[in-house]
Length: 342
Image (cartoon, rainbow, N blue to C red; front, side, top):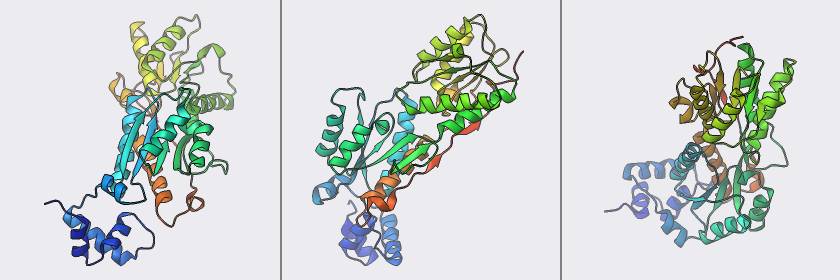
């Protein structure tokens, strides 16, 4: 028979209401009571039904993840981190893919929240960087946490998880400079994503610190896609004065650039070094494996969900949980980079 909340209450020697308070992570529960109920839940392997809780309560036990991102690996990692946190706290996760450029995107987000009775949202780029989305959610009094590109916590942005793309890009570029590369190209991602601008700024800052000016012919617009990497590298390798290294804005672009170089019979890394960003499976599935920046997307998503759950607990206020954890993706040196050939 399926274990019920009654069984947990009986084993722990507490009331059903007390079990409910523990399941809802209410801060007023005494530690001794929390330990007894938690032990009973573990022993009985109790799995609360979030849908039933939603119907029986004025509170919601579901959060949402609304995304528009071409990188499937990024989406999978985000979902994993969110699901891990949801299972830990007894919540369900609603996943809603959509088009951020849609004319009625703000109303669509509101409709999803209200129709599904969501307790809150975790917003990733580009939604986390759209002020109209944040303003609309505040108007209908729905909690949300944003994952955004940034290096410094700001009082203007509350309840955010920051990813320091600038510092990570600076470190990657510095790695290439230490190998003797000065003719370094940069393949941009989608311009509407702040991460693209932050990574470009970090790249340029590292060059400037060494007294090197970025060659404007080496900085190419693009998108976060394999095809963009192919196109960008093909253009660069067709120039009279070619770069000796390429910094791609993410691993998918870098994999496309590597593929394009292979087609042109350019040896990697003997003739051309290539680096990516994020440490997605693309960086490990190429040959040679890509030097990149390890961005722990699952951990970042889990941290964002934990922040959101602090908002939704009874007795907590938004002002009490205005935190801005900062993640700095770490440099991972692999075989796609080598000393400059000239």
